[in-house]
Amino acid sequence: MALTHLPSARGFLKPHRIVLMAIAGGLVFCAIWFLRWDWLPQYAGALAWGVGVSLLMLASTSILGFAFAVPIGLVQVTGPWPLKALAQGFCTIIRGTPLLLQLWLLYYGLGSLFPQFPAIRQSFLWPYLREAWPYGVAALTFSFAAYEGEVMRGAFAGVPRGELEAARAFGMSRWKLFWRIWLPRAVHRALPTLNGETVLQLKSTPLVATITVIDVYAVVSKIRQVTYLTYEPLLLLALIYLLLTALLVVAFRYFENKIPTRSV
Image 1 (spheres, rainbow, N blue to C red):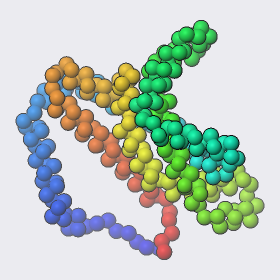
Image 2 (cartoon, rainbow, N blue to C red; image 1 turned 60 degrees about the vertical axis):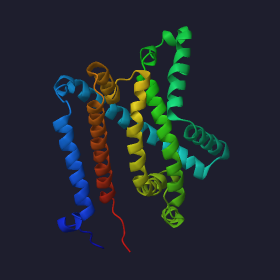
Image 3 (tube, helix red, strand yellow; image 1 turned 30 degrees about the vertical axis):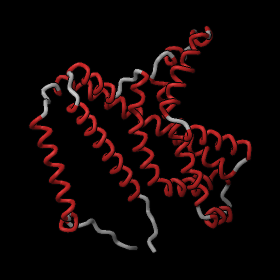
Image 4 (cartoon, one colour; image 1 turned 120 degrees about the vertical axis):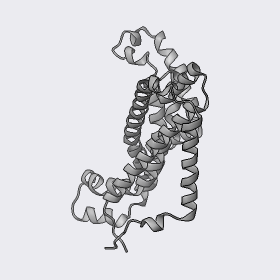
């Protein structure tokens, strides 16, 4: 087993990194000293609520999207051809059109048709279908499923056939082979790309503000309208997304390091 060591402080503090950290520190100092932040305590609660909505939107759509991505990727590898063609068509349409357009088609298009049907208005689904967030969840879920479905297709196809044949030789059923061998190996291969897709999903969540979902982007937009400030709210929003992205990257790196790998 090859041992990996963390980089030393001397190795990390390269000249270009020192310069970048100095520039970043100077920008932070200037932002704190020269800009207005007296409004921040007044809107701290609303900002916290908006961050929670954004994280909830990210978590729910990523989990649901990945749950759809697994069968979408698997059926493109194993068939049958009608389901394979359907999965390929879904991925092509979703990946080939803007997410904002898909969101508006669901909310302003499909959402405007539901009130015309009395059966829907009288059903238990109406209290949810009249809100904006289900359409945002649906659009972001479909987008994540389409992109990650293509990733899982490559991951399933890239699992060595020898491992699957060895599992069959041990008498594993198809279901047990899938859950114990094929899916874990495919997820392991797709994990770095899944990290990037999840970060992109986080950056896509502000689009739900265009259909009146109050996330952190919508809160910051309201702050700008009320305070007539431009730079301060936007800089704070950028910092929030930077911190959330860093947390996602650290979390995925943790899980990647937890997965045992063989070193040559």
